[in-house]
Length: 413
Length: 144
Image (cartoon, rainbow over all chains, first blue to last red; front, side, top):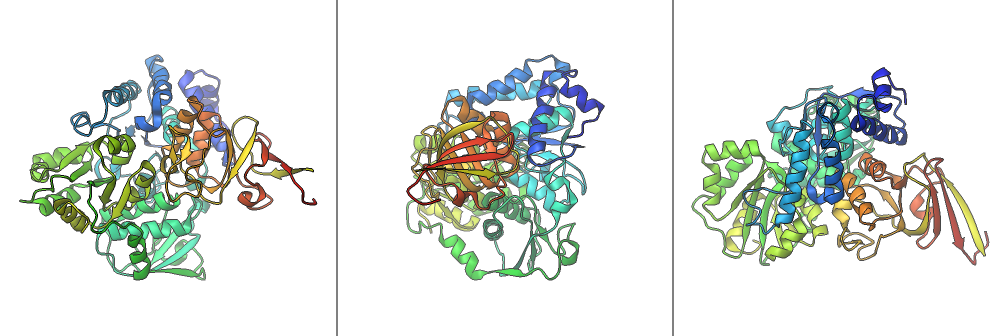
């Protein structure tokens, strides 16, 4: 890779060991993907929950945090993805003090590096939405696909180590979605069904993601009859990234890089149809009707203020079944607003619990499930339904209304 | 009879390693698919469910979503409950970044075709990421 003087100085260790590690790490990744040079980035977002960090990862962060201030501080605004712990509620969730201690150590290390503890995977709704053409180093696949697709920003999936390296250096290797030629559509989908609920948008994302099936495929979508809003795009993108590792999609006439089909692909590209039968088949994979439901989870991505309002309206004057838990997970910013507006009180009056700054599957989901006896999990998040089976749960997927009705009945309705 | 086959691929990351192959045409995410404490595949839908990945040369089609895998390879290796190498037809940036941090051997983009067909479970495999070369040693009764 070509290095400029500053990058060479970093590699020589002249700007301290953390930046030397960072530039060397990114050069290894850049070589893997044939990057010729680095591109400057304006923001970094790091996914680093302690379940995935483990003791080894936390020590890695602490080693950087122990360096002199001039060496350890990030150079660009850098924010965090959800944590594994909500310190107000971890005991109620039967998470352990050991988990909380590890989490606090990670937070201390991040703060020593000057990283802003936003603890959110909906930063594009709540913190600072990127602008079209802005180069970024974002973690969380849902964040990346939204910012690339809906906002027209440029980011690869940056795992925690690479996002940190980008924060420490202010740059990332120029490969993948930082290059125009990789943003052209490679698969064309024609949607022929009504999308009513957020879970329907998620299912569409899951179907297209599974069919595209690779980081290097870019779907272009036509035929969507309902105008999507931010939450619809959020659920669809998160599911597409989860099912297919897909980092970018275009919707003709909706997303900024695709005012027309021809703007992103050859108009002769054959199209595959996604219809109502595909959507029904997708939901049918997640069974459980009539079975006892142990926990209903709204998370992944964290809920927007509008989703919190919808949930409050559905739960008003109703009580959860005594054997069913309901968790609503949101960002610290939304939680503060929702509390001020009385939404948290309305949700929790039902017996539900509002959690902030965490995400269910990043929070020691296996251990929580075992400690609480949670097996059958119901959600409207296609992303969560896809992930959580690996943690020992039996997921059921439905819309928010059915999830709430099931939490009240104590069984899947 | 012992057959030796050389497969060329893109330059990868990590050290030269040798081990026994465990092959699937399924995809991979450390977060979605594994019980990382027990060292086995745990997601019921995964084709390798119940099998151990410890010290194996894993071969997959591609990587799935899940940014966490970047930390997880490092964490798994620190406990010694990790694959020796992971090979893909096409990998996503997350796994490549994770291998770079963990110093785990990883390669993709094989010039001879579908790596999940070229390598078979139980083959003895040496991975040299620096030059993009994977060598298979196979006990075989077949000609050629």
